[in-house]
Image 1 (cartoon, rainbow, N blue to C red):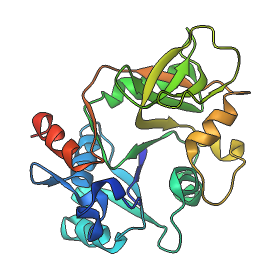
Image 2 (image 1 turned 135 degrees about the vertical axis):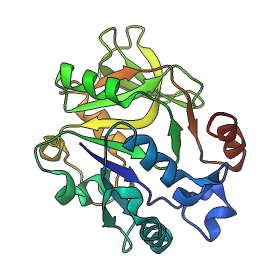
Image 3 (image 1 turned 90 degrees about the vertical axis):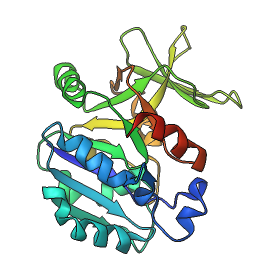
Image 4 (image 1 turned 90 degrees about the horizontal axis):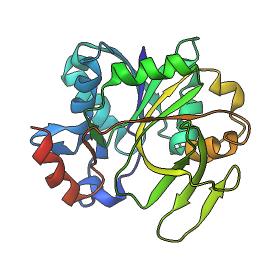
Length: 237
């Protein structure tokens, strides 16, 4: 199985580090996020990666070369000309991923110990084209699921804004964990082009398709802010 790691973002919340470096090379207990996530996925037998780059992307390329790609096959999806966000980045990397096999997507700034084997097994059992890792934790935005854990909406906790596929029948609000398992048929379903968020596409597709959530209670830290680095260092040594 291949894994696409989103490492292109500007990481504005992680300033001042990201004024001179890519977010993916921010360190937790002295180890860059990108290295941690490559080794984390490698622990589940994944050694084939696609990494998208934009903001200080040359530093990521140099870092990988200096470490001999951590013994993995790594292809670079180079968005130097334009940052395409998660959806556009997925489409841009299509040539590396559209080979008939399921693949993982993971944000470089997420640290977690989700059991990837369990996640992939669940994805294959329900035969979805998209499965999203989610958990019951604090977040300003929640995905809404029915009793069968099928995506039916999205809610902004702070503003009250929501998008629903149907009337809210007491849907379960869960926070997205930044890890997806994808079947490449998604490339036939996505309608947007250019720069867009893949979550916007999921919220359109939930009207006609089943997108399931995989609920976990694993550790998860979004290392998007300097204070979250301190939090992550409690759990990831």
